[in-house]
Image (cartoon, rainbow over all chains, first blue to last red; front, side, top):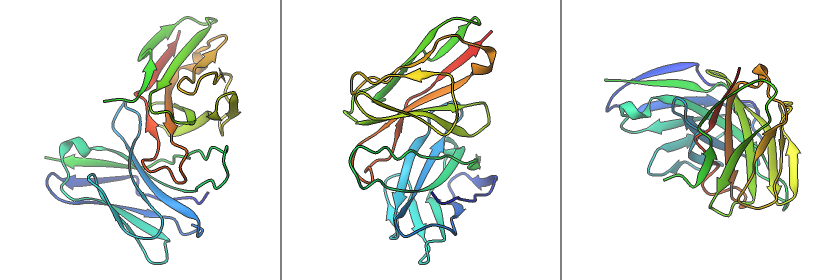
Length: 115
Length: 115
């Protein structure tokens, strides 16, 4: 699975959009981009994933560059409860039955939403 | 509302004791995982399973063992706990679709302290 690079930490003002970047320059054509977050002392929470098209759900938007070498997670209106470590993960999805593709977590970005 | 449950939430136990950390999910997911995470550090996969009677070791070597006798249940056992086993243990599951529509679902974790 491709390696990802994220900034160690970021701040964002409450109510503003939080834009979290991720570089995955060695990503291959069949690897998906996943985003998770982990609020202190809790288990990670799935946010969104995509392959090459931009994606949006009730939590966030995912923008993937055309060459797929980087992506940005956007939280449109950050709240204090969005303060967490955000993980960007790329991985190949299994195509055969019976194989478990596990997620490999890196260090992530500590996002702090400021009042 | 959690669909994956870990018990106990906190455990303090003496060296040499045998312990079992429980993990159950009600979503019918075939794939389940155990991660270990020290405070402020990365998550590391220690075990995974892609179905009943199937278990594999993860990226990080662990002295723990797991079993998967029922789809919904994936307990982790330490035969003889040591202080080096002090950590947070996170259980997760995912559906069998490729890619899974909603990623991994994590439990709240068990914070283990061996004294």
